[in-house]
Image (cartoon, rainbow, N blue to C red; front, side, top):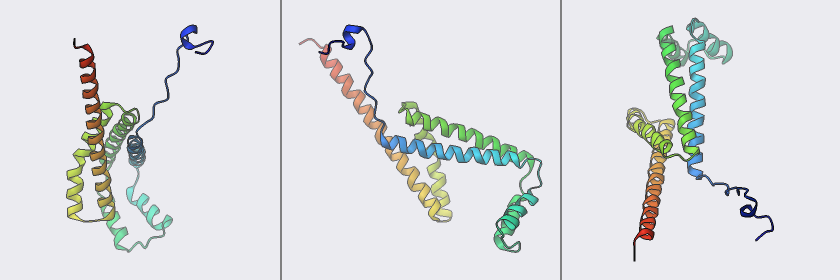
Length: 183
């Protein structure tokens, strides 16, 4: 025993640094990235309030990106931009900020390995799988297929982690109960 051990001095020893599950950290980063992107969408939507959307789209597509103003893509975007109005932009911004906040909450819960974070992420990610599958069936694209695969993998991994933690709690409970039983 060292001359000045923590027991002798009354000082508290530092616990060993806890290792995070790499999968949870990766999912937390994925959720945080999504939250940051949604926050940017919310800011962008609110910046468009009280602006002429047609002018903004024209400037972005034709003047900055040098797209042909007669192309189908530009016309398609103009048609969709005409549907936007100030109340809709505010709702889009509000929804983006709310979902961004949920993403940050998911990321924090996963990084800190909180059970509530795992269940929250499982519920939110799992609830979007049917919608993603429906969209993929409507039209197959690499982006849609990739998102479906990644989100399905997140759900499967979280189910595995939750099951592992439940099994560990059960093992501890049985071990504790066997220690307290008279022999």
